[in-house]
Length: 206
Image (cartoon, rainbow, N blue to C red; front, side, top):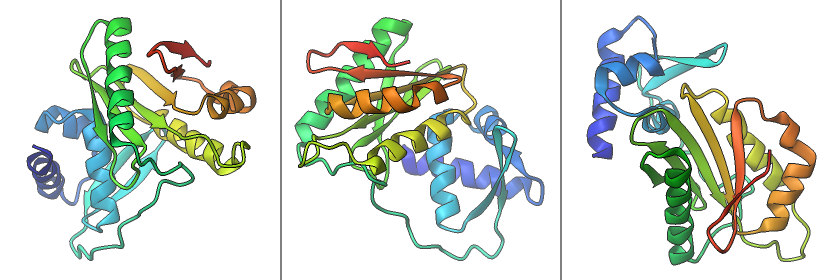
């Protein structure tokens, strides 16, 4: 399904060339959800297939006729690598369950490419989007600033998504979540941020 949606998005952008299209236009014409479009267009830009430009809070995309593949970005920008696949799966499932109970609509969590501890969240009604970030405790007990910057980077991306409801869910290491909330919760404008604890309960951080 992901490969099929990627083809739909790229074909729509190509057919509209030389005009630029927004993610909202792509969603209307292809039926692909906004969070998936975010992932797909980011991948296409990294691969050199399309060009992106930001206008206000919205992005526009045009087909790159030269289409020279670019190096694929990797790493998780300061997020701790996660070795416990089952723990990550429980975190993703717990996040979806709590958001479903809160919003009254089903959610899915898709692993993000290039970052083992990041999931892209989407509601079945396409009205909500978000990220879920899972961290392990830092070895020395001190929360690295790169981790806080990593959280802020995803907050920045969310505030530019075209969805009615936006969520950022942090899990795993509670001190990291608390440290972020103490220093940066005031940055949130349109995004609700939560910590998912070990019992599967969501605690607001903003």
